[in-house]
Length: 106
Ligand code: FES
Picture: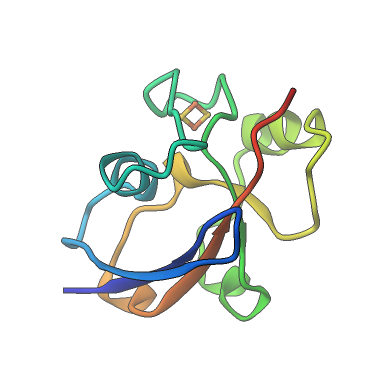
């Protein structure tokens, strides 16, 4: 099972085992990262699943859909390594993926 290393908004690290095919947003939501609300259920319309992906992993993710880019560009906390966690599907290739939960938008 792949692992994902998550840093919360206070800088605490956790390692979480996930099943292949799981959606990262759902994993974070189920593991009580309260900033990850996933309000829209993963249809790229809420951005309440915002994470920062460690730069060494960015190339291993599928490219952003235009809607994802547009949503992220509207966030105050956007950074170059921002992604919507609802668009990240865990695979064995992503074993060890490192993400940081982004702060909630006001
Ligand atoms: S859960 Fe709404 S955009 Fe990701």
